[in-house]
Amino acid sequence: MNDRTPVYKLNSDLCSNLYVKREDMIPYSFGGNKARKARLFFEEIDAGDYDYVVTYGSSHSNHCRVVANMAAQRGLKCLIIGPQEVSDETYNSRIMEILGAEIITVPVDQVSETIDHKLQELKDSGHKPYFIMGGGHGNIGTRAYAQCYSEIKKFEQEEGIFFDYIFFASGTGTTQAGLVCGQLLEGDDRKIVGISIARKNPRGRDVVVDSIRDYLKGEGGSAAGTITEEDIQSATIFIDDYTGDGYGADSSEISAVIEDALVRYGMPLDGTYTGKAFFGMEDYIKKNKLSDKTILFIHTGGTPLFFDELNKKRGK
Ligand SMILES: *Cc1c(COP(=O)(O)O)cnc(C)c1O
Image (cartoon, rainbow, N blue to C red):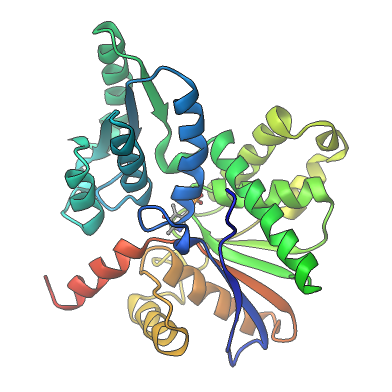
């Protein structure tokens, strides 16, 4: 990406050097980390002769929204396979519909076989489908956030500062894996802290570690040779205390953080990703007494979910 997303300081009571990087302001389809990842997937799609894009995700998925948009822009067909269990109407699902995506929902335990089946069916009927894993998971998605790490470094060099901590919402862990790969390849000493929005440890953390290994092996270049397993393990901080069913993160607390961020900073957060991550970061700062550190929060997007949340408040 040529244009870097904005980074600026927040007027926080909790930490006098708290900055935010606004990935939600990537200027494509309401932005977010899925837009940064999808841009790289579509570079590959544009270079091939694909006529179909197939991916999966729920009706809430920011990833599916952005992929549907990029496919529609190119006149490519887009097939989205999603779990029946999470198929209620949302702003993201309505945008996917406007974009003409074909959406198939099946029970969650049939998603994987349905994808295989549909891909085969398309190939058999003469199509050339490109498959993107849910959330833009995989080395291409990881590369997007290794690139984001370079943007952060450029900002630091220009401003003459150094972020001791970087916080963000971690889901499939691809965003985290990319940032950590950037850090490891640069040899920087700082803490990159993923706040889990759903997965529990050890699985959540293991998935991040796997993605890091995959990326370093495939795309790390010569610098990756000096990175040890121990380096990878100690650089991967995946906090699962704020997933919602865990302690200290009930929905009223998250709502309070969302309202506070809107009032204080004019910054929309949502209840699934950024609100949880911001809540988790604030709690982590308090518990670990980090108020004198220089900290970056990456706003990973999800703007349509902010409006879903407003509807929920109305009981719609
Ligand atoms: C998908 C998503 C995340 C999590 O990103 P991963 O790379 O899957 O960890 C965080 N925030 C928002 C808004 C998202 O849509």
